[in-house]
Length: 240
Image 1 (cartoon, one colour):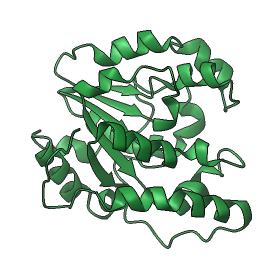
Image 2 (cartoon, one colour):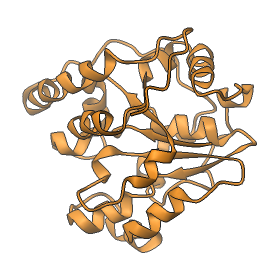
Image 3 (cartoon, helix red, strand yellow):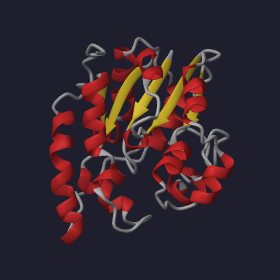
């Protein structure tokens, strides 16, 4: 089994990777198209030089690694906005595609603490809806996972015909061997965690440019939220 988990940044995506990566039957890949995206786009990101030095930048080689058969199962953390025109996507047809979503107000508040002035392209909402329409898949909301991690993960595992394991609910503190080199900048909080954080508090109140960005992203979030997996009720994969 190969799982391609698609989400924007600051979206519980690293915790989900740690959850599946803590299973004895899974290997994990951390944003393998990040370095090709940086090279193709020319965009300036934190640790850009280290990322393109430490990771494979050839998108065809990355796609081949994603397509290769795993020893047992593979979990791949991906971001839709990394998949620029010309970056291969055919490999995803042989994966279970899952789209992880989070309310944009929470994403933007978290993102701006690490990188100022994000754009709609940076947070990936438009790219995620376009990707969903192209390849289909399941949708799961990070809010539901934080509300009840076990119920949410059991529902997800049931939907993809994967036995649930209690090891998915916790992991050891610190960096993981499958972390990207960017972990030192982005993963501080999750490196101190041993499991999913509790339910989220009040939604952040955004102002100015951040509020305007949230309004642009919200229709994309609502589109996917309307299609999310019901916790406790396993749905069909919905692959296209």
